[in-house]
Image 1: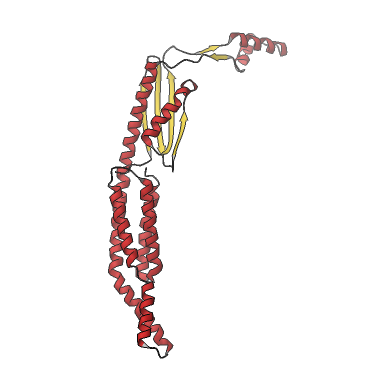
Image 2 (image 1 turned 180 degrees about the vertical axis):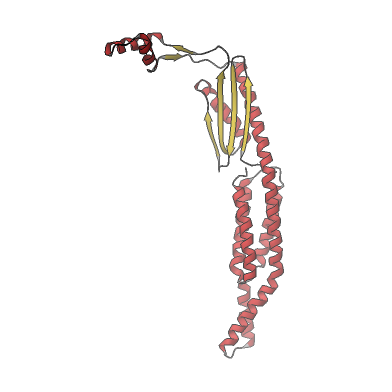
Amino acid sequence: MIQSMTGFGKHVIQLPSKKITIELKSLNSKSLDINARIPQSYREKELELRKMIADTLERGKIDLGLYVEITGEETTAEVNQGVVKKYMEQLRNIANGDDIKLLELALRMPDTLKTDKDDINETEYEAILKAMKEALSEIVNFRNEEGKVLEQDFVDRIGTLNALLEKVNAMDPERLGTVRERLERAVADLQIELDDNRFEQELIYYLEKYDITEEKVRLANHLNYFQTTLESNDSNGKKLGFIAQEMGREINTIGSKANYAPMQQLVVQMKDELEKIKEQMLNVL
């Protein structure tokens, strides 16, 4: 079963004095690209959180957000009184003003607040890990649901390509007959004497250049291989992408050899279906 690279997961935990929210957003990418927004006090745990994401999501452009909201009376920030007083003295030397106005100006200056770095206690970190696992579970479920939609779309389009290939097979004898008639008519218009045996040999040689038997067989095999890969247990978007490229080569060759307008119209439809498959393939893990 295939899995999409698009997904979203979110989990919120409420601690006695903090509300911690973890959000995960995922978009398609050729490799794993993790962008983490984490408060400074939690940076020491970033590598471990990144590894959890990499082990679970494998590929995609991932945005991790860890948001902390203080819900109790706890705070780690204090007014740096000595610095504020020094600023007020310097401001008073520059211009007269009442203390309230000078205090407002001083508090806007650098280093007026001091923050003590808190160590993350084990209970809090265990809660964060649990929230991360829940958010990862949510985003995996999201990706699986999106994958089901993509898979059904691929199945429908592969079915359409098989139906178009059957039309190509049915049309091929008529195409070769028409090409042969066209060549014979062109030679007849030249009004010259030709050796019938030699002409027949040259005609067969020329028609062989327009033969698409191998391309039709290979395309049928690629379509079957694509379907089989879709039904495998693993989601392998890169492998499916390679198969789609091979399908495109065979379709292009059939189009270049066709030399017959009705078949070229079928080839255009096949290219259109394949292009839609390739567009959706960008989202497959």
